[in-house]
Length: 148
Image (cartoon, rainbow, N blue to C red):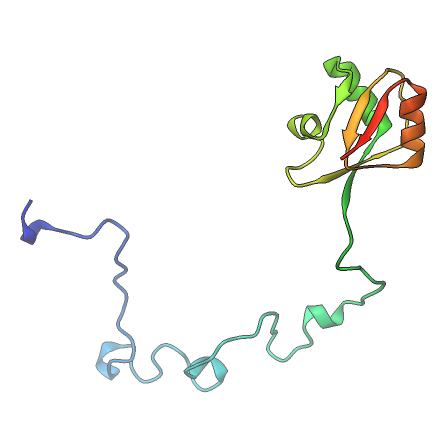
């Protein structure tokens, strides 16, 4: 290896046309920015959502209701899904990690067990929250509902 054989890595150097270097270069005058307007001027930066003066989508779409910034969003899982999983994997204990591993919840999801469906087998369930009907159904089947 010699100094005269050194080259930059492939794709690391972008060799573009030099703009704003006189009319003879082919990119002089307006320097490929076109004529007039905000985009031709130095220091131009477009605001997020700007649509050229047209009413932006964010302002055109109707807005209803109120969403608290402090709300706690749970991933709902019903008892019929719990029963299905318990039968499929022949398990008597279901926790948050079990549900995540088997694709029923995401990594950061808070899980709430809801009471739709019927629980036939005795299952001990650990989750972040339970509905009253879910707790009643779990205890009726002989299981235990543990809140994290």
